[in-house]
Image 1: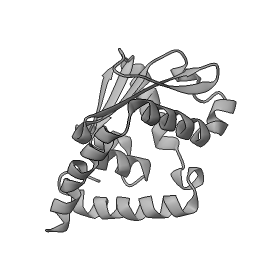
Image 2: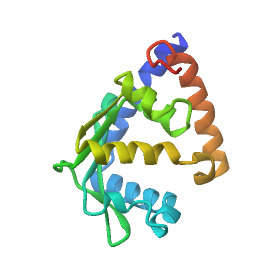
Image 3: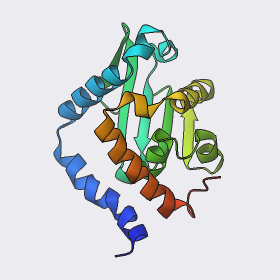
Image 4: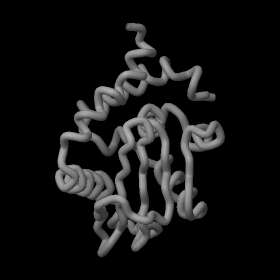
Length: 165
């Protein structure tokens, strides 16, 4: 199997795993991880733009949505489906490239690899916030290095379908 086909097969591997994990466990995990990752941003008030708003992040290739909001200075994962104020959607590989700063969100957005639906101003604010995240400072070193190598692999394999420059 060529490496590009292997990358394309990843969603087919993840889909059944995702479907086997109960929603309450997924929601609890998302909430705990996001609150830990963005502890400093919450303290500084940098997430106040999502207070009392419903944000949806949709991973298209595995048909997975996470809904969350900021309530009482805590990120709360919401049971889906919800009526979001804004939805950011992309494939998993595009999101990994975004998270690991291999490609900027504007490039993804203008090449229709990152879609914003709903409150455009809120979506642009969220997109810009995501662009400022220093993932190497947020994640434990071992997890960051594994993800960074994986994102390098995706970057090489997807450069034809996701314009990176």
